[in-house]
Length: 67
Image (tube, rainbow, N blue to C red; front, side, top):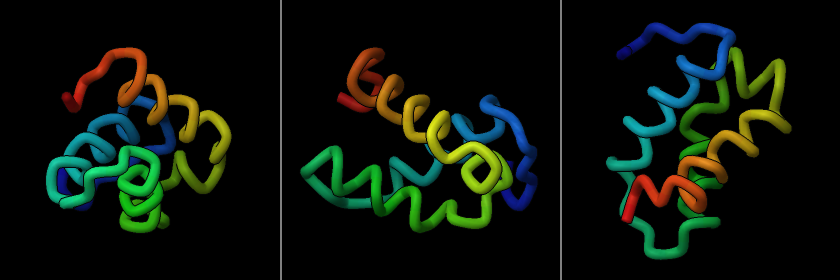
């Protein structure tokens, strides 16, 4: 979804996953912060930062998507 951001959770999840694999960091919390820095202009993160954080935590810790 390069350069296509939409103000919804699906768009954010796709963008989050794309950025996650690019960043080299062992600590999941620090890595999540770095991904958020890279996605600081994403409309969903701007309009709904609390849900963006919950979505990221769900993908990392509940789904264990990145292990």
